[in-house]
Length: 375
Image (cartoon, rainbow, N blue to C red; front, top):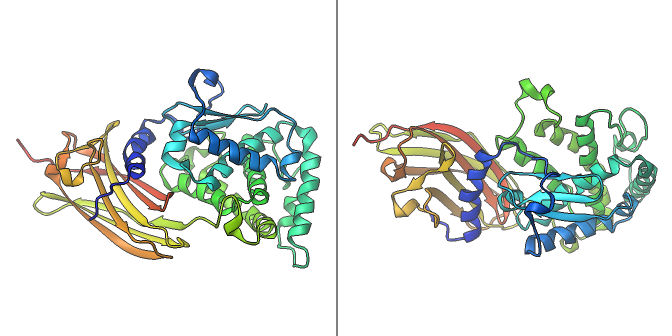
């Protein structure tokens, strides 16, 4: 095992995780917070404002409602992003620390989605967006066979079109679609939108299927499936406008990675916790990869009694790093002495992170029962 010395990673895998369980909701309404908790003049503000301007400066972006667009970074421990329909877009510091970071492509997916909601609330601007999207489609497929399904996407009808917004869930799908098209024109690979859906879908934040009908937001897994329908057109637009993806604002497509079934059990003598983590990564373009694990007891991170497994904030953290490669598939095994865990609780939660470069690819959470030594 190799211990990380990267401040960015330690911040992600400890402080970040704690908030994941403290959070009351995945995406929290922020309109009532307003100026009270607003943070200004940070590198995060600058990055977000640049991406926002990129999205609004495209031909599609110029069809958006004539609003005073403004970004609000909100000091809040919960994962959250929202907009008020009048041009103000809110993102919490938790969202930026735990996931968005400096990855411009994921920022484009989040900000584009909130721009989409503003468009949905202003029907007078729908025809202009629809007409410009048709132009983009024609340019993208000039000289090529049109992919199946793109015509129905562009139909302004009560059923099946971009602006089928008769229910809260349909409005989310529409905002996702608008975001993906804005991203593509602005030079942000549409794969980043799928990455956002996949991360939330697999990280334990998704709405349980039996109660899906009770909530306004659709399940992230369903959003990903819907986004896949729009992907071909968005990719065609991106490729036609940015034939050399390395020169686009968002760069090449993000890596793709998945964690397999994580297992954690005590050794026969109860002295160690044996953790096995299968994973696979592709399209990494030489980015360094990392698998890490932390524990939560109640609402607090488990601290470490052993300096070999101690993060700078004192929490217990397991890390395994791999040099850059295009792809990698293997298992990681951690052997953690039970005596290294500074906790009196037997029921814990284990979180495992998979990253490539600055990008979080997958997260897995699961309960773990441990037998602690008797004093």
